[in-house]
Figure 1 (cartoon, rainbow, N blue to C red):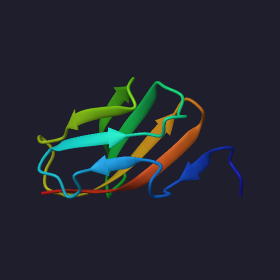
Figure 2 (figure 1 turned 90 degrees about the vertical axis):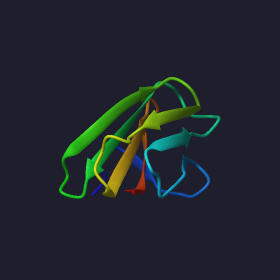
Figure 3 (figure 1 turned 45 degrees about the horizontal axis):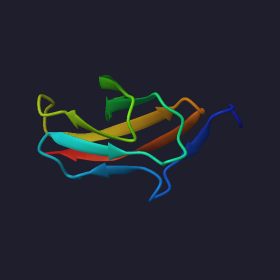
Figure 4 (figure 1 turned 120 degrees about the horizontal axis):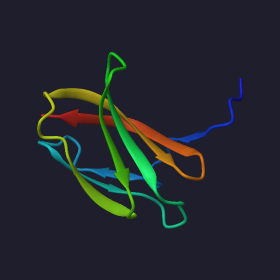
Length: 90
């Protein structure tokens, strides 16, 4: 079923590092991406635990206050493209 959202988890398009992380993440998005974008972080249960707006192609985010564990991220670009992946906080 198509819902009108282009979704991608293709490696090389978005970089989230380091992964695993102790709290600081650097996110780099493609040069052709339309900004601003939104970075959302979810617990495995589906509860959103963090949201950040980014204006730059490469930006740092602090998630050190979150508990250790596995999280799912979504990066939503103005173009409608959505990138997803997993982050381990340790």
